[in-house]
Length: 178
Ligand SMILES: [Zn+2]
Image (tube, rainbow, N blue to C red; front, top):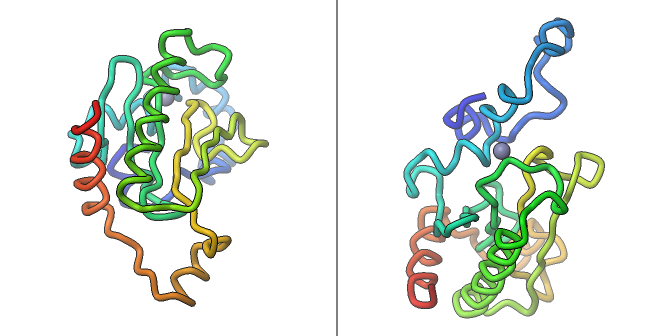
C-alpha cells in the first residue's frame, strides 16, 4: 500500500487484503524488503513534513501526528530504522526517542493543559500495534473527563482540532525548545 493509499483509504489494514488471502503462495514470497517498502513509518519521512504531518526530524527519530488521533495532540515518536522490537534499537537512538518524548510532554502540557499524559508502545500485533513491524512511541494528552474521546466530544462539545492546525501548533512550540 502506498503512502497516499494509506492516507486516503484510512487505516493500515490487518489482516492483509483479500487478494493475499486467496493467493497465499504469492504472499509467502513477499520478502522482508517488500514489507519494509510498504511500511507507513518507513514511507512517511520520504514525504514532505506537511504531507506526512511530521512535526520534527531529529537524528535517529522523527515525530509525526497520529492520523487517527485518540485525542487532540496525539503524536508518535518513531525511529527511522525499521525495527520490530525495542530491544533492537541502538542506545543512542533509544536515548533520543526518550528525550523527544520528554520534549513532547513539555509541548503538550503547554498547548493543551492536560490533566495527564499517556506514553506507550504496543510491540507486536497481539499487543495492539497498528503497524506491528516498526516500533513507535505514542504520546498523547489526557483529561479527567476523556475516558472515552467520543463521549468527550458528545457531552462537552469539545471539537476535535483539525490535524493541519495541530501540526502547525506543535511544530511552532517544538521550535522553541529544540
Ligand atoms: Zn518501517
